[in-house]
Image (tube, rainbow, N blue to C red; front, side, top):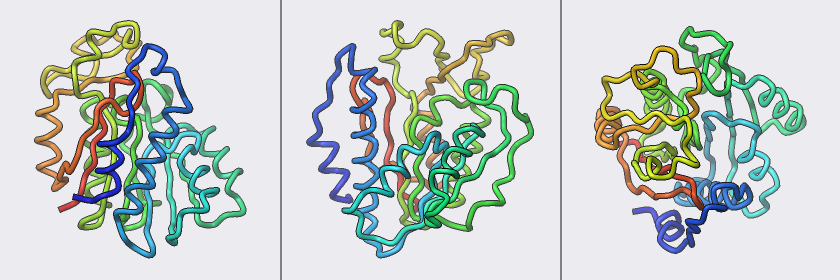
Length: 244
């Protein structure tokens, strides 16, 4: 059991208050703490990082200014939001440790008008030591959940680490004020819109934990620790993975 994130999860203080859901600073702290704990636990002098759904660059911007990071790294991030990618490219234009790519792929929440053709990830390297996916799988249908998890399994080196968050517990059902448009999948046979072909308000998907466990096992991804909630009043579960 790696020590850094084990210690972090067992000693962090989680505030399950109504206001906690909206505390963006709290979210950023917990996210980056986990990220750097995994870097420490890799115990490597040089690492390659893949950020799936990098968004506006919370992780790389913090990483670039972190004087406590004492490893050499290469970072690659991609996202379906073209504006976010363009902003990241402009921000990091003088730092060649960071690369960003846009994928033209439809996501009902973030890129509803993009292509429905499955993307080709030919811009990625063959392998990465650490793969990060914060609040990505919480917005994916079954097909895309499997696609991105296959990508993580394919790109992660043996004994490399990954961390992702998703909705896989049903506490959120009892908190409708935070979950107005969630779809709860009781099994993997249902489409992400819960069988409703006209549902245009999908913002998040909650998966059956046993289905996730079976998928991870099939892909050779071992769950070495899970945490709930990932921060404050957010109802996502975080999972630490190791490629076996």
